[in-house]
Amino acid sequence: MKNLKNKIEGIIFISDTPVKSKEIADFLNEDLIKVKNSIQELIIEWERKEGSIKIEEVAGGFQFRTKEELKEMLTEYINKKPYRLSRAGLEVLGIIAKKQPATKIEVDKIRGVDSVGAISVLIERDLIKVVGEKEVPGRPFLYATTDLFLEVFSLNTIKDLPEIGEFEDYEKVLKEE
Amino acid sequence: MKDLNSSNSNFEKVKLDIFEGPLDLLLNLIKENNLDIYELSLTQITEQYLEYVELLKEFNFDDIGDYLVIAAELARLKSRSLLPDNEDESMIDEPEIDLVEMLKEYKKYRAFSENLRERVLLGRDTFKRPTDLSLRSNTLWEVQKTDIWKLVTSVKKVLQLENYKEIPDIEIEEDSIDQDQRRISIINNFKDRKILKFNEIFNIKDGRESVIVSFIVILDMIKEGNVLVVEDEDQIQFEYKGS
Image (cartoon, rainbow over all chains, first blue to last red; front, side, top):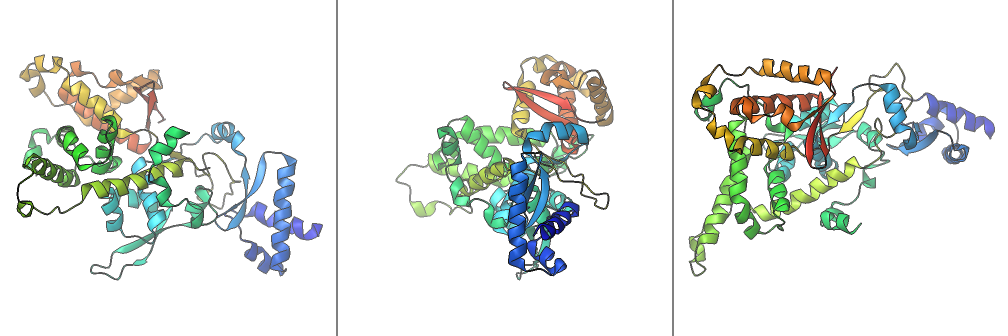
């Protein structure tokens, strides 16, 4: 099945966002199981190469990415100013990731402070989006994380995030390490 | 509210959203004082919390309402703790918010967010092949590590230094320091060296107002991503990232 594998590899290679196995199967008019197996084989082949690139399963799809050991060198090579995410922004993102879909008021309540600034930055950066309105007076927007959020934070699905209960005694855990 | 701020109305209003909020400040104070999250600990740090709120007022922040809500709740806890035990419980106002519960809940989410930062980030730790078709192909990420409260604490210390009292009032009433000018001079200082020490930007000898204006300018620059706060062995330094 070298032919099928090559086709799949080509599609993953040119895709800008993680490409789902179903998308590939539909496009190639191939059996989904066969496509999935080929993708797994490709992942292993790239791993065995011990090169600088890997195929990773993120945001429900597959993507070619560079290995972490190259991060300093590549950051220098790209030489661009990064987008900055403040701690407040990260905090709001974390709450929305866990509580989604969540309203601004629900986020504010946990943080004890207005989150409007952070929310607009996160929307601008396409890390969260409006997914509807809550059926309560005022009909506030409901926010949820985007596929880009999964892609940026190397998550396959939102379920890959740890449970919030694990952070009950976070500081203690850190001390023990 | 506006009247309160009239003394420094020459400053631009600064948005508070660079801070993580009053609960974050409380958790930091609890940690600094080696306390656990109990009502009793909260009454012990009330004074310190109020000092910070006073400072935020002086910095002329846009909206410190959320900080005042917590301040009011702390004051309520404090006054209740001062009541003798045999006081009729029904005389005491029911709490509008359960601060201890709020803090515990908030702390979990804060820790969770910290944990997010440790993940392999696309655009920081790993990169994908960019295509010209995509606007987001070259997205690079940087997640701020610095605790802004540490910066505030250091500025607070400078403002509390004894020698500021020796500066006569006349000097303070001189021409007010222009934010844009201060910004230019800070950027100018960065031209020689990419990293400046804390006291190279915040020097009380320049006067209290200058320290405050510098702080507001630095906050703005941090927000824009032009300045990075670097903590080096408990020393705060500033790294210039702008062009």
